[in-house]
Image (cartoon, rainbow over all chains, first blue to last red; front, side, top):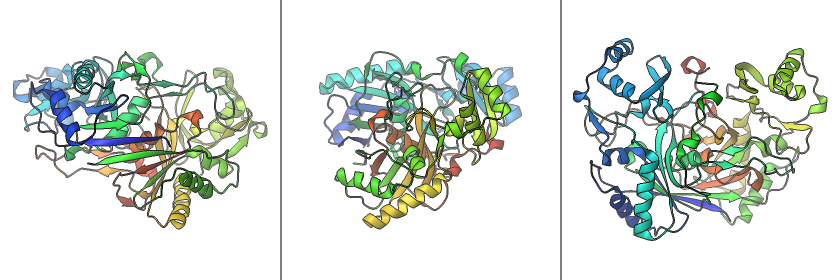
Length: 250
Length: 250
């Protein structure tokens, strides 16, 4: 009987810049009475990582550009928040009806460059994405492996919208220790026919699964996944980015 | 300790038109030694539903239109397969580089109108989506509730690509018994700030979670989810369709 268990890591306090995130996460894991083991996956939402890494910006410190002021006026937004979005942006994919969909420096396409004004410490602060979510994942992974002696993987996630379908889902932004993609090309289906197009974004499926336990206000910033057999991997979550030249919607 | 368990329902034989799907699924559940209980969710991939409902088409029976022939020639495809896609299509969203992204009659936006040429019975057959995935879900739910006396929910899923991100993920196409959306608007975040934009597509997150166990060739067409507290709901999975007028990418 193949099964996967997702467990909410609860009781993690408000995180501040410089906090030892590995210790906070491990304390949460210990409270859950799970004993991490080889092949476990810890899924961590980017927000507590960004906070620990000091990626919190006081909007009062932001001087908006003329362009940011123009956009803000047109769409009735805070020009300082728009400026913050533009500073994380390398390309505007779509800008209409108050929505700004952008390509961030690393290539992720999302609304508002992932800048988050909810769940921050006060109304005048906003949280940026981690500078390098793969590196964040790798640091957490190294810390957990040292503490538990188990060969684990770590995912860093955020909550994104998507075209065509309503509602947000949790997606993968950074990874350490596992392949975010399961490539089934060259294998055969049940009828013996070769599967030509089947590349599964398993890291996004894991993120979404964890998202079920990460409902915003519930104080669950991490989820331990047990039972999913991943492929070991040294690379980046950026393999999940569809190259612009292969993307019909950029 | 909040946790969710996903269990693969294995050993379900090749499904044919007219098969009693509830019985096949229930036999699989029984083999897994799970005893279904209130609040369980059964996630079922559309393919076995389409087969049971006779949505398998012999391409030899399809007479392609002139437009289908034109498209097929331009992109080196089988004109009969293109014709089959067009017959499920109410709008072509994008047609470039051999990809046809369409809006289906019910409003789902996806590649090839969900027509599937893999995992069918032979090379000359293709599988269409169920006519009404909500109704399919409702029939399975009613059958399972009768057999087990448990108040369950049922999701019907398919494997879709998406813009911007590589790889496929499992998404929800039909639902019975639960709300596919978790609407957190009006609730407050950890800092006491109201969440304005947080509508979570939990049915897609559940589908993706189940997708982790549904790898194409492994013969897992269904997954039982236990431990997710859903909201009872009588409506359709179509609430997951972003209305065209609110969609910047249609």
